[in-house]
Amino acid sequence: MFANAIPPHPKPRPGITGSRVLTSDQLSKSPALIPLFDSIREIPEVIDGIRCNCGCTNPPEFYSLLSCYESKGMARDCVICQGQGRLAVRLHKEGKTLDQIRAAIDAKFA
Amino acid sequence: MIRHLAVFAALGLPALLEAQIRASEVGTVSQTIDGTVISLEYSRPRARGRDPIFGTKAVRWDEVWTPGANWATTLEVSKPVEIEGRPVAKGKYSVWMVVRKDQPWTLVLEPRWHRYHMEPPDSTKDQIRIPVRTETVPFTEVLTWSMPEIRMDGGTLAFQWERVRIPLKVTVQPSLVMTLPAADARDYIGEYRFAELDSAGKESKVSAFSITHENGTLKGRWTPDDPYMKKFALIRISPDWFVPGIYDEQGTIYEVLKPDLVVEFKREKGKIASFVIRDMEDNVWGTGTPKR
Image (cartoon, rainbow over all chains, first blue to last red; front, side, top):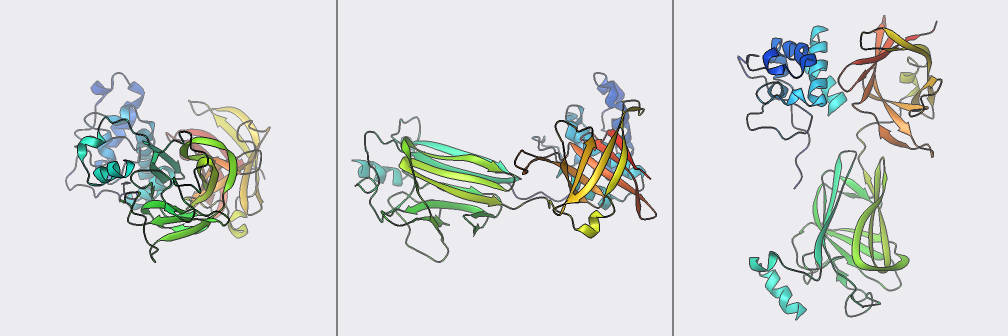
């Protein structure tokens, strides 16, 4: 059977931090991505409220777009994860709310 | 003998289902169109010297027959579609044909999809029954379902066996609205100066960009022409955000560059002040400003 329609965006987990986002040491083979990962680490409460639309097979610990920047670091190789992250960071800097960021992510990537 | 084997299969004897050479091997055809997945699973009988097939003891006239073999052919759609203009709800169906000699055949989609070929369904209200036209084509040895034509808004699902072909026009629900009301389009129409930016954010190439509104669709075009995009549709995905739709030679959109390129307009005091084109990774490819 087919999967259901696009799932809703996840609810940011209370107290979520960016401590598990990959660091520059873990990104030595992708130095150009360090600023993006650093930006993601600064706004975990936003990124954790966004569904990833890349369609990759997510690991068991996957919860949100934030998960793509942690652990196995899918965002190291996935341009969709990177694009969603950059868009979220940019809109957050522009003062957009989480719902506005979700709407923009959906418009472009869903 | 065939009927005896069918009874064994109907009893669900698992040993028969594995590593078995079958007269009618299982095949599938699956196609995604604009996010709708259309899948058909069927067993594929071969003619094996039988010619004709229809109107004989293999498939009798007026028989309710599954266009396949063994377990009934199934059709599954992940979202609502239309087949030959008739609505078909999301779900899985067994597929049957009422095979007629001198009249249109009838396609029957039966919600109770797990049925054996020897159990054709009676006519019920919850079935979808669609008259279909048959075409005469060169002999086809193996019963074949295929999707030989794909459009932006659907495709043709085709059945073919013996000398019979039945094309079924499938229409999917569009994910985007291609048109834009004239009142909404007015803000964007005009001539722009477009500058491509290099990785350092400096202008690397300047060209003219024009936006028009034609036949209800907002359209963009560079001068000189971009050889791939030429004149393309600007399809709104959110307020002031658009994605390019690329036309084929017949003037039909065949590709939408989403999320590859997004044209983001910015307003000042309600009027369009500029736009940026961003790629999939949110990098700025170029910027445009209205020519005054």
